[in-house]
Length: 249
Image (cartoon, rainbow, N blue to C red; front, side):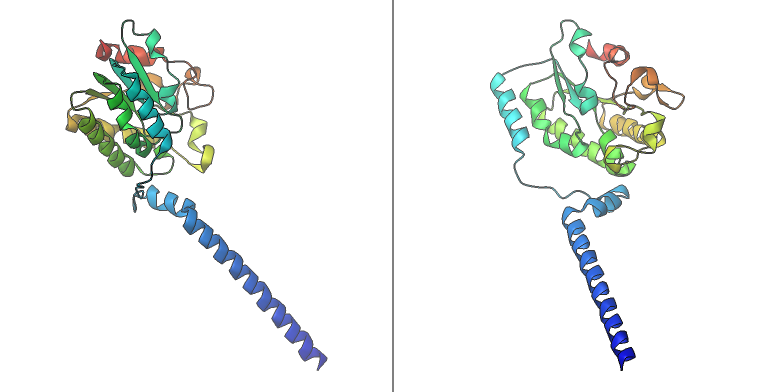
């Protein structure tokens, strides 16, 4: 009798443990489905799904648009991109050229698509684009090229007379290839593959493609003399400026 009671208690304990494990797994699954953190990375990486567009107002972008429009500012050149673009100060390299830097830290191609109206607001004659590195951490090349194509279409529609210059993505340091902030991973081989398709895309749409990868590459990765963190240029923009000088003037 005592043996049966012990077995019964043991079975009950196992059942309770299994129920608790199931509840924990269910809670985790609900959280992941809600946040889509893992699913998004897996599905986006292999191009199985695209991002769900949102009709909600991006108040940060809307605020900047309002500010730029009210400035009634006309510039000659816009630099449009992420933190790598933001860190530049091209004004000191190009005398007599009115430059507007619309680089936004951490921006992705989808984020840049939302900001196209900023380009329109400052009425440039030329726009130099660099984007994609923040997307290549989590998504495959084809997904990023498709988003770039959509970005170019939006710019062409918003500012039909602007000259568009598509700049290649820069290399990264070799140690960045195995780990990156946020858990994303990107190889220089992936960047090169993306740049090849980017060149094809630019030529297909009738835009100028500028190879900046080669300008900053050494032994297959970002030249350590040009960076302190393996990704950003840390003020080393003179080679970039020289590479685009013929297109600025």
